[in-house]
Length: 337
Image (cartoon, rainbow, N blue to C red; front, side, top):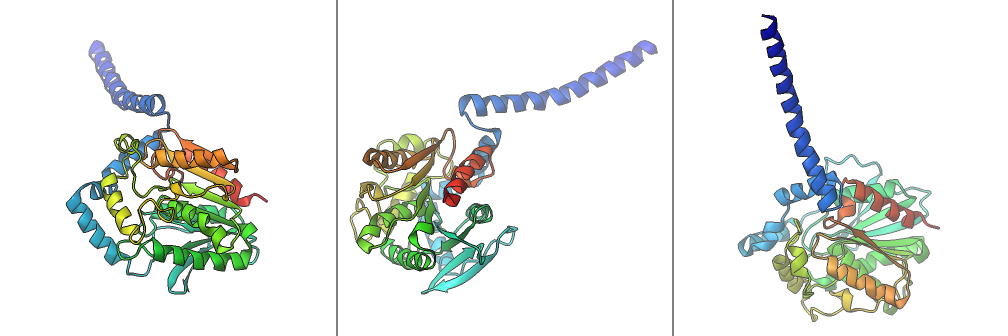
């Protein structure tokens, strides 16, 4: 009986060992791929898996799905924007009407001494996601800045022309309140592309450059004609060139698609100042983001490029260790005196 008891205990321990060993081996393999192959954290790899399961990439890739997506967004963009109820904001959030454009103000306080004008991305089709709201809230909470989020006009009903006019009106209003030396212009994705093209026009508008221009995964060439785009698209879990090129044609109505108004990669960059560019090596905007940075650096202006090795589109916006490091750089720039 004693031998049977020992054998039973041995089997039980073996079963427990197997139960622990299998998931441990899987986790170690997952970590090896994350760190060894893609040189990124486990959280970033998990995020990419999540994006592949939930993103709108297929709707940007499939022609029929894209047409339906376009119609849905046109309808959604006619409505007032509501702050997501699921988010517990750490700063105040107010909505105002600025000459017919809904504009949000985060962290409005008597002691604000600077402002961030944040142009959200969304492929010129979509209002802010929870990640963009949370990003704006974090920047507002961790700085002395008031963050302005103008809901600028979007495709398919509007074009770059209406968006530039709306952003100019909003920017002038913020500058009047804070002064250009205390204003940071920031954007992600399509919003970052709009921010660059708008900043390139400031000289002709008679407005000084903002203290910093912060660009997260900027879409700077509406045509996506860079031959490297296809290579980067093959690993991008969020974006697809088919739909983006379709949006580009809608957005650029009235001008040539290579015009700096819609493709700031072709515009003058020597007047810009204190530029920060963030881009992941697993996003199709990477080659153009790196190219416009290289053009900036060649002119001698102060510009920084923060490469997200193995990371995806808008990587500073997501809850990963890499995003935390990117946020520290952004917050440092916003609070810089």
